[in-house]
Image 1 (cartoon, rainbow, N blue to C red):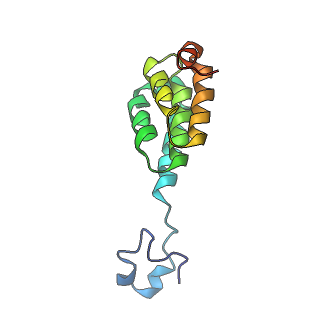
Image 2: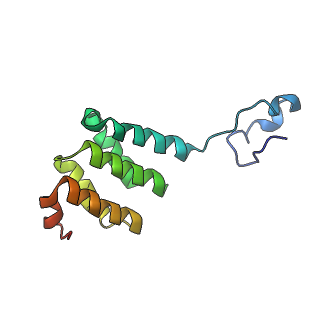
Image 3: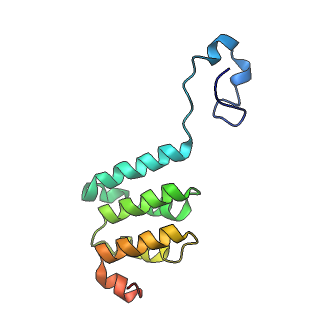
Length: 123
């Protein structure tokens, strides 16, 4: 029997497959891992990925996974140095419920826009 259960990506049709086929299916990957890798790859592109800033801002504000949001925050900082929209997104993250994200936003904001950081009260 494969190592995944009723909550896997295969749950909806696993019981409809022949038993011999179950052992040949690849291990499913959680969707959050794919989202995390996607935002990380964008960040590695640096300023060449400026067109991705609005999408990364949406991920930062709306993804349910804290790790994905942390990668989006880092990618925004890598891509958007000097971009006022990115500084605004980092400032908004200073009020996030997750302490790790608030701390990272503080550090990135100081690094990419010290003036905006000072105006936001970041020391």
